[in-house]
Image (cartoon, rainbow, N blue to C red; front, side, top):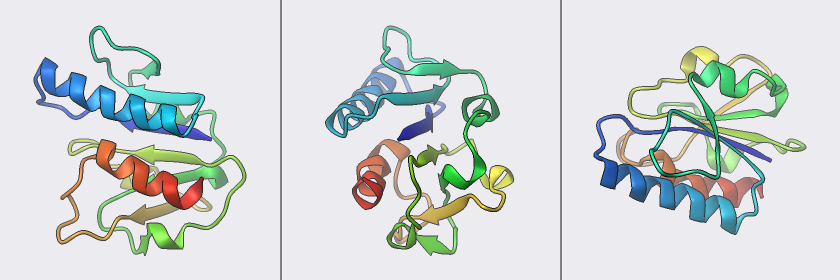
Length: 131
């Protein structure tokens, strides 16, 4: 399994450190070995760093891609099973709609508002459905 994320913009270093810990602890709990992030959190590691989301997913076959996108028609409960899936999370600034092409999947977590949850909080919910 591959997990790809984007750091939230506008966070302080302390907030980014907390976000990094949330990602890292969840990734470790599920024993994910391929963790990719767009951007850099100074002093933190354990992930492959990329400058652009397009670069982070370039080597992932489209049928393996599962994008978490606010406003998607399907919910995480409707994820189709895929061998060795790649879970791809955006951020407030990084809208992933432009990257979704068949046969990839776009899903959402049903919340009162589409942007209620940060990706690091969504990660364990999505992993629960595909792991």
